[in-house]
Length: 381
Ligand SMILES: [Zn+2]
Image 1: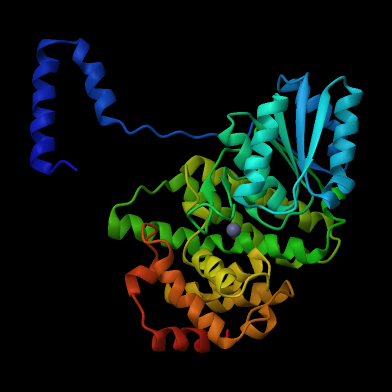
Image 2: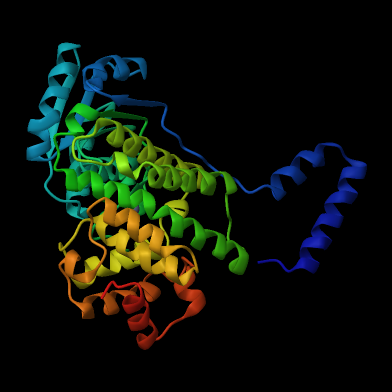
């Protein structure tokens, strides 16, 4: 990176050019501006029965010939087959590919299918994994994708990032933003309520994610987008204020949750990274999944992480814990189905997991004893 002296010298040279040649002004502007790309969804449709509008939306977006549906066997029965029927009725040629996990192999399998059948558009129909695979494979194949969530268990339904196992990184990677999101509350309400609760916790996690992002800006001069951060934070605040609506089967609560998850997804699109939505609490969540796989849902792990990271940030961790308790979600190791040792190991691992993502864990650089104290004082162990 150029030093300040070098930069000033370059600027001085440019200023001399400006004085003599007007054309150079344009070059100066280009040289000094960093490119920032925001890829946003074009259509977001939320509500009871909106799946019936899938053909109309697809056509309006300019696709009328061919589509590929990526779904799981279960989510294909719930919504995939119906989406296919509606598109075919409208004269489109539609293929379906079933995937059961989100690994590099699944992504490659969908990419192969895209290469052969050359669809105009890819639909991801399902919860986390199916949408992740559809998003990642379509992005890498440079084909747009439409998100049709059947659960609201995390912000991946609307975000430009994908969580796929088998790439060199154990966390989310940039893929592409969905061109449209069709979130039918009638379908999402039929999923187990635990999924929605997990999604709610993924929204609450933005409290500490935004704090970590700001910290990285203050300490490491990392790019910080105030607008993206505010949007993520507003979603978390709104979710906390309406936690009493999150009762099983309450459509108003579910609608708030879906809108909050979509806003979080959009905040990542604006930021150009997962920064506004994923901080130290997510690092803990990812680490715990590595230490003890398949013991809890994404939002549940991140929710417990948010309690502990809020404590480290000096924020009101008790309020966060109370909100999670109101949701009936786990707030400690026992409820998560893990051991005390798993929590401490995950905390140690979280701090080392992603060196380029500066968080409160890097700033404090705690030892094992301090992590034990953190887990004890927040009553996680
Ligand atoms: Zn998340």
